[in-house]
Length: 113
Image 1 (cartoon, helix red, strand yellow):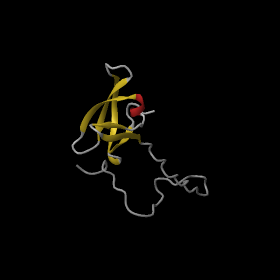
Image 2 (image 1 turned 180 degrees about the vertical axis):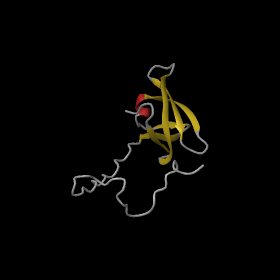
Image 3 (image 1 turned 60 degrees about the vertical axis):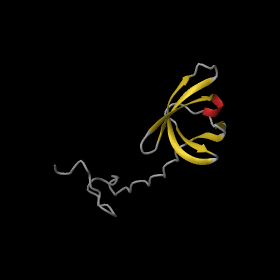
Image 4 (image 1 turned 135 degrees about the vertical axis):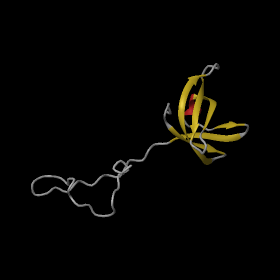
């Protein structure tokens, strides 16, 4: 079930069209229908309010002015597993003084003003 703060992929005319975050879901005056406020993740940001029934909020296809539309809830992929830190002879993990392989990491917080 989709709820506030969920990300959705909006399909228009059976094609993925844009991502949006559900900002608010409030009851409409018509029983069984909901005002769904979407923050459309485009440049510039836009806010749409659509009146949908519960099944449409949860992914059932519907039409607006004859155009097929569907909301698909986006589930974030699992991050790749992190490799275990190497453990030295003393049982200590890789610490601050352990040299790193690869490129340099520059902290924006350590920059001189």
